[in-house]
Length: 424
Ligand code: GUN
Ligand code: ZN
Image 1 (tube, helix red, strand yellow):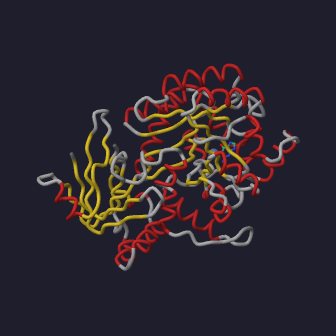
Image 2 (cartoon, rainbow, N blue to C red):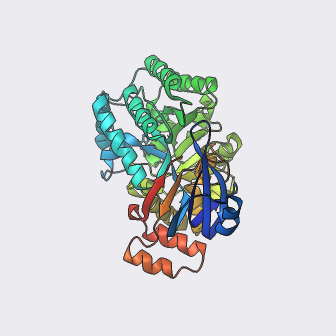
Image 3 (tube, protein in one colour):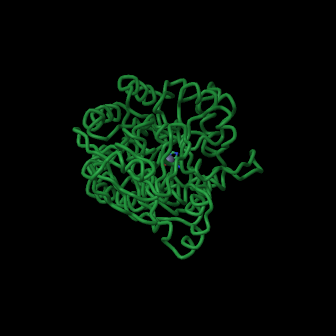
């Protein structure tokens, strides 16, 4: 058993925060080698239940669930900050050339190491990630995640059309490769496989059918893709699938909406789409820094809540501009606030935080597994320093409530705040 004492933030399964200004987190390593939360709460009460337990004391530090990034492209590390006139030119000029380099396994391994270092620096302990169309890029991702004992989900990109040489794959082989990667990696320790059709325009009907068939054969794998990010993209999909009711309906027709299916962006949806997401328990990965950077639009939080759409936060690096959950939460606040193109609202700091921890876990079908620090869940957590910068120290000293403390961290925080990451 191991225990940590400090300020302690947890969530219940509905996203309500629980905060102890003097808390204790007790963990135990189970027979499967995974460290889980045994007990947590106010120091006095919890310590009394575990007499004699050695405790690491972290005065002035906030212990909180590790962050969960619902959508990130690890091979786009070098694409961050590449300006373009929107999504489609950005893919063509920067993204596809960068991804073509992953034909080289040594390059993939080097980037994977850098990527996981960067996640750790920023307090991200779980991610749902795209690799590239090259199977070796998936091996590099999982090899490194396994070495570090992380809970990670990823998959080989499927893109057999409307894609340049170097990233375009071949229909039949792409599905065989995906099946082999599922066998090799899915369920190995804390690793999970995501079937990854890049987006409808880049996948032939045969590839989409094949992806759905894989998803049916392996119901506890994930599906990840993109939908309704950009108006030019939406128009393109309408031309490719004139018979579909909407962009989202294309995925529904192929059988690619289900629990553990996660679609990035979900901006240009209508009420019927949102209802369909709710009914199929399909989740949205909200990617605000990416949407602001590429000028894609604003996720409608009010409509998502109205339709009970599962959703959580994502960096979408390299469309996104930062690995930092603090930057992503702040951008989500801006996007929620925007009230010209949709209803504007002020998301509560604890709600933003939940969307990047336990809420993201729930949307991924990992409720109770990570993201809350509830007893029985895996003990992936961060130790944050609310005094990491002079301005943060000044601001957080004046916080009169948990919401004020969390908002100060969201607005002023970055990787300097993340002092330790403890993995299960
Ligand atoms: N749509 C298809 N591929 C991509 C990608 O790599 N990034 C983003 N943001 N959108 C996409
Ligand atoms: Zn993306």
